[in-house]
Image (cartoon, rainbow, N blue to C red; front, side, top):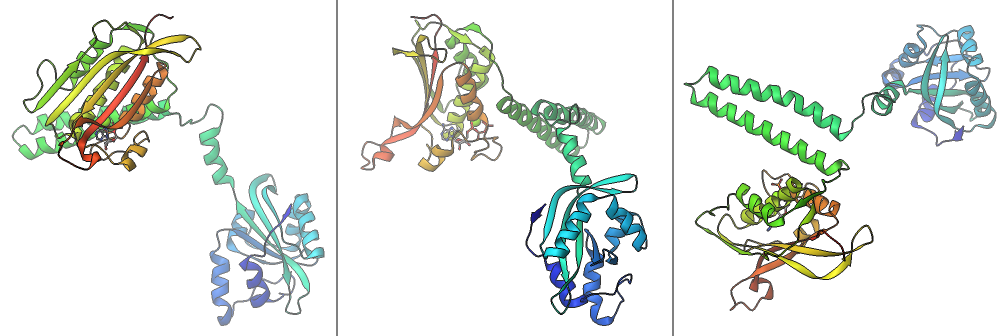
Length: 396
Ligand SMILES: Nc1ncnc2c1ncn2[C@@H]1O[C@H](COP(=O)(O)OP(=O)(O)OP(=O)(O)O)[C@@H](O)[C@H]1O
Ligand SMILES: [Mg+2]
C-alpha cells in the first residue's frame, strides 16, 4: 500500500455527486449526464462505497469485472471479505482520508482471481466530511499475458535468431510465388516489373534480417589460417574491381607480399573488405581512385589474450565525397546511412568482425590529395581512409 495523489475522479465525486444515499444507484438527471457518461465510459472499474462499506455506485466496467448487473450489499460484503487487502485499504482510507494504491493486487471474485492495479480515494461530502471511498481497479491480466508470452519459460521468445527465422520463412514463399506469377504472364511487361519489385524487396528484407542477426547475435569467428591478400582479391572480385575495374575507376594496389597469415574467418573478413570497397566506390559515384594497401605494423602490441602479437594493417582509401565531422561521429552507429537503399549496418558489422579477431577498424577523413591550390586544408585532402589492423599468426 502506498499513498497516491488525488485523481480527477475524486473531484468528480465530491463536486458533482456529493454523497449518494446507501444502496441507491446514481439517478440520471440532465445536469449529470456528462459526468454519468464519463463514469460509464471509463475502461477502469469504479465502485463507490459509503462509510459502512455499502456500495453506492458502480460503473459498467466494474459490473463486467465482477460479472454482475446489480451490486448489492451482501455480494459486495462477500467480495470485501475475500480480499483482505481491499478491506484494509478501505478502512484506512475512510479513517484517515488518505489516497491509497496497490500496483499489483490479486482481486478475488468468487472462484476467479483478476490481477489489478487498485486505487482507493476518500469520498467527501459537500461538508468536507469523509463519508465513503472510491475504488478504482485497472485490469492487468491482458498486459500480464502479453508479458508472459515474451518472457515466460519455453514460450514465444523474441530472440534475434528466432525472429530472423520467422521473417525469412514467409519470404521464401513470397519470392517463389512472385517468380511463378512472372512465368504465368510472360507477355506482360508490367507483370514482370512488379514481380521484380517484389523480389528485390524480398532480397532486401532477407539481407537486412541477416545483417541484424549478425550484429546482434554473439558470434564466434572461425579460426582458420587466412591469407589476407587472397581475401582482398576475392573481395575486389565481388565488388566488381577484379580482374578489371570499370573504366572510370583507378585502383592502386600496394601489397606487401611477405605478410604472414591471419588466424580467422575468411568469409567474414571478405565481407568486411567488400563493404569498405563498396562504400568507397559509392562515395565517389563510381568515378575516381581507390587505394588498397597492406603492410606490417612495426610495433608489437598486446592482443586481447594478453600475449604480445604483431599486427598487419589494411587500408582502403577513396577519393570520394568524404564526410563531415558529424557523419564521422555517427559512422559506427547502427542504421546510420545516407544511402536510399543502405542498411547502415555494414560498418557496425565490419567493426564487430574485426574486434572478434582481436583487431581494430576505424575511419579517418581524407586520404587522397585534393587541389593543391586550395587554401582550405579540408579541401586539400579528399575522400576517406578506412584502416584495419589484425593480429598475425604466431607470437613473439
Ligand atoms: N568511404 C566513404 N566515404 C563517404 N562516406 C562513407 C564512406 N563509407 C561509409 N560512409 C558513410 O557511412 C554510412 C554507413 O556506412 P555502412 O557501410 O555502415 O552502411 P551503408 O553503406 O549505408 O549501407 P550498406 O552497407 O548496408 O549498403 C554510409 O551511408 C555513408 O554515408
Ligand atoms: Mg556499406
